[in-house]
Image 1: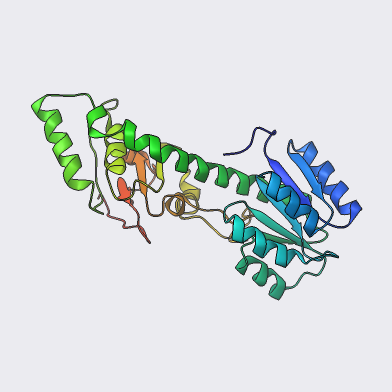
Image 2 (image 1 turned 45 degrees about the vertical axis):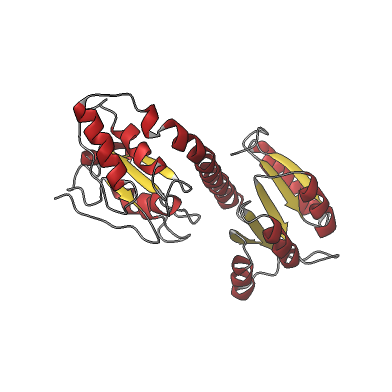
Length: 276
């Protein structure tokens, strides 16, 4: 979850004072809390004392390279987003940085607008992932069978069905009038399944823009289309290993027949079962 420091807390690591001050001014104007490190050693000391929502890391520094520091960071923390910055841009360096765990790579001088967009996206995505991890424990307790009120024969039959389908990887379609508790049942299935340690992602089907449906669900890489300034995970990737729940699946796309499952249990890949 994003820290309480404005829009997020960012560590800038660069040995050039002009670069540090430039990034500090840019990020401060955008509402981020910024800390500065003058080299790899200074950065490591700060990382041992504090946590950050994102790290901007220079490649070439006098004491140690940013690539070496990146390896150390990933040995300790595999989740905090890291963006590499360097004046020595090349495809080989970019590929190496990404292989070593960087989330993105910007050559100097960078485009301020594109950098801010990527920072915002990475922090938002990480925040969503953390919130899902925190919610998964609460889900198991809150949506256990014992916490679902209902003693009628029909309700007991529903709970028996939940117990039957929860261990499976089957795609499930939940039907019922608005307000009958379909999402509660979906969360109960998730909480009592082998996927409970992974994310439960609820999607408002009616809010998915038809022209960006594929990108929203499956994500895209940077440069895939005109406005794709940064790579972005789709809902299926966020829910990988867990559960994705499409609320009001009939509203998806509006101009087209629904083509995705109503309630999908994702593993390494999504299983799509057409409804029509």
